Image (cartoon, rainbow, N blue to C red; front, side, top):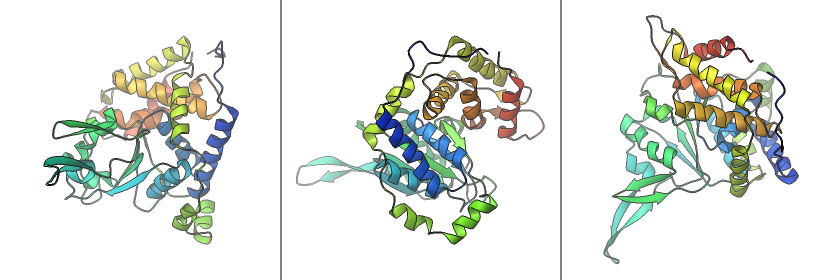
Length: 319
């Protein structure tokens, strides 16, 4: 593919660029050795999506969410999902107020700018689905009344591998609401040694200073929409989407909504790296975390979705 350059390059204001770089660096100073995953968290945030982190307990999933909230100065709520959690426990409930002789809505923990849905797959499907409207529409409906959620609204959900006891698989409609799914995995030897010998992560998070705020996030989301994707880039993206629909091991490929999520994430990736236009490398950087959890596999053999997504990416040439 030939070089892609827009006619009028989009450039972030220098102060905002400085604050963004400082925010990314600060989160990386807490979540050690996971620069790629931190990058994907910021991609999801500024592209207007939500983030799913799937991994074993104790590898830093909750720490990443806390670090993001502290660094971005966002209102924060953590919900520990359990098998007895009810939808009203997270959304809120209408209570009859005797003095006013009417029902008053009392918001639940979902009414925060950054919501950590911890171990989301330990709750029943009924409670999991209570997040659907919130994540898709930035609002909830209780007793026929619609309540807007704060802006920006960003859900970071964690889930344990499905072979652990007491877990319920997320339905496909729920998975599709997460723009990216990532895994932190074990730290490198060097990062683990620093974790063992340095300040406790909880104490470190308490000392973090806000590098950005909610208004900055809204501005970044406005800029993401303006990042240029050339016709040649769209051709490449469409070729990738088409490949998911014809692969022998994929029963259901990417939907148009998934294609839009891939494009938005690629735009955010470009913006994070200081460009006002998307390169094929931006699409490649986000392709697996955006698409793997959206693929429905078929066939007799059991294959890993991530492996299939990587195979799809390698099989489509850049022209």
